[in-house]
Image (cartoon, rainbow, N blue to C red; front, side, top):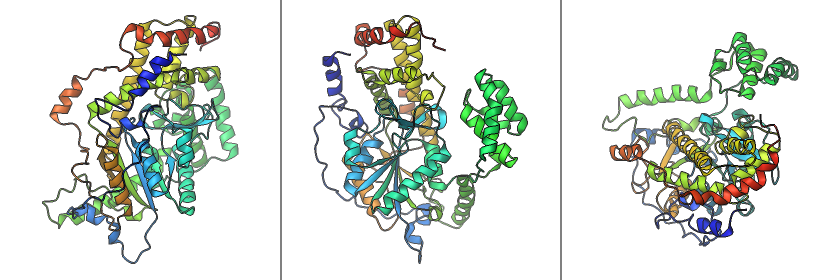
Length: 504
């Protein structure tokens, strides 16, 4: 076990970064954080919406129709503080939280946890039992205070798909609304959120006979780890895009083969509702723009809700971010936090390995953090439970870099999602909380983010680009060689017993 003094020193500093308490720093765990009630809502003075598209999509422009139920969606890159905002908002609005994060669905150490797939290699882990640290899962206390859905519902060996998330999240939303409460969907998995709001393609489900036939055909290839031959099998059947799948993504390869067998067409032949929606409404909005005031930029980021009146709910969507330098620094600190203690991510990775799982063998073990930790521990086991400081720091650096790269991919993805209002996560939590609260209660349907809270979505400025080019990780806890001594001691005591076990 790591020294209690070292743990306490780090955790005591988690809530503070250069003396500034911001939205994303509030999300770091700290047993010494002082619980303070948030101030009551202070309404922002709203300015009249002058932009064409914001007016075009206004809920007020739907006369003689019953107002749809409101659903709040809060997203943002990893480490941005979206979970903290959702939690405080749920308390104020009598809401319930529906998880759309990658790893929080898996149960394991304390139950069974579920993990979800996200574009770019990050997996949705809220659904997986037992994977609490790497998924930054809400604490038992938080879940007792505010009901959470789609957390701890799968085993780490289970797979989870965007189609299943759509069904689960829509069912949870209906349940929350039927109970007279406010649904707050919170997470950073862009593809899942897109399908949740716009719908899923009508891809046929394979019959039990077809599913069994596909499993039988792929079984020997998977047993022999012949990924290339399996891909060629599916390509010859009619899906050339199988070649673009991530190596050893057997779940999606099998699903692709099932669709071909069931329909005679590849998955790409089925229209995605989001694509149809964009084609219909963006072109219509552009036509309306031609006769309008051309001083208004049709590509301005305030045009998030083009045609959203045709969606099933009135989605009120926010994306939290902060200057990339601040975001990256927060992510690096967060990775350090996850390693601390005998119950950190290394302990959870040990549990996954002891369960018979290997890195990249399932959705959960492909997740950022768990993949790197499992690979590192396997190397330690091969060396009789030994690790040098250099090997540990190489693991930490890889973990931090993968997390930063994932955040960068999230930012790229959500820049193209026009339905979101971008908020600056570096501002005080109360500012964002009050604004979202007021936006939910607004009857006009028009949302105008005040300049003081607005986060630009259109890439980096020249200054920020220069700062990012010169960015170097500055750890807060693991700085010198001796700082990882407790971790190496823990590895020596817990991993040496597996040195004779097969690791591949």
